[in-house]
Length: 278
Image 1: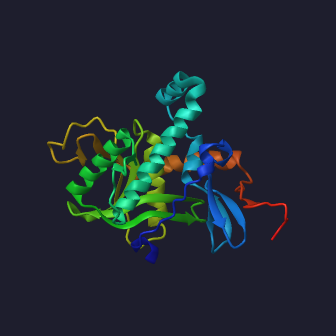
Image 2: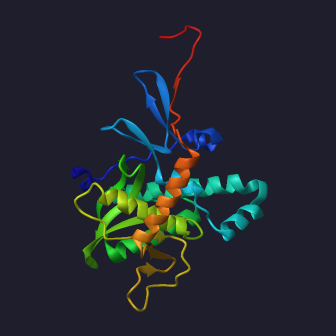
Image 3: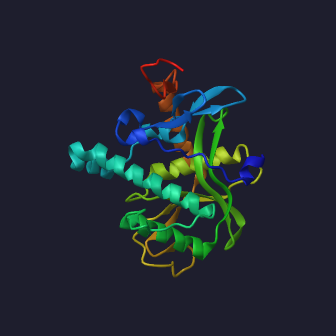
């Protein structure tokens, strides 16, 4: 399939999600000619051939347990949990967008016209990404590409499929992670994307991992076996088949609890006036 060789911009951020949790999993499409705004449910992917909707891998993995540490962290946050998680999600989105812009040739600037484009924490993570880029020179095959498979029953957006000169025999899938840790669910998600890509692309992914931009690493791995630097590392998915098997279990549970899943696609007019419709 040809789409594996093109860079695709598919990420759209809803400003409404900043003020109303109703829009957390929605994206906005403003149709100026039709004078309307459409909110699309990002928890589902649409397959044009079968004209069917399928849940995202991340939506399916909502049923997978995050572990005691994660639950305890939420309890410690108490009533602030939703707000803290939302800020973390917004920060992650900002990092994703910045990396996408970088690969498309845009110069990233910490400050511009006395205005801060990124917080210090965000900029430090982007510097760690740049260290990875300078060290390993990834060559993108696909960037932020959206795929869906009716056969597999889910869709997803892959951050980066690439080659690394240091590993000429491999094609990598790399997922950007800006949170405090890498959970097993992250690797299961990566394994599902690996399967999704290989089910429909000629160039098969052979290795995958999460590029953790908050790692506790102090520098390059002295053995040369691990891909890491100061404050970052690729946490590799070592057993894709086992992780994808766990994804299948989560998918079975999700289907049991959601027998007739439907996306929420909502359309509103984008203007009103005393003169009525124009």
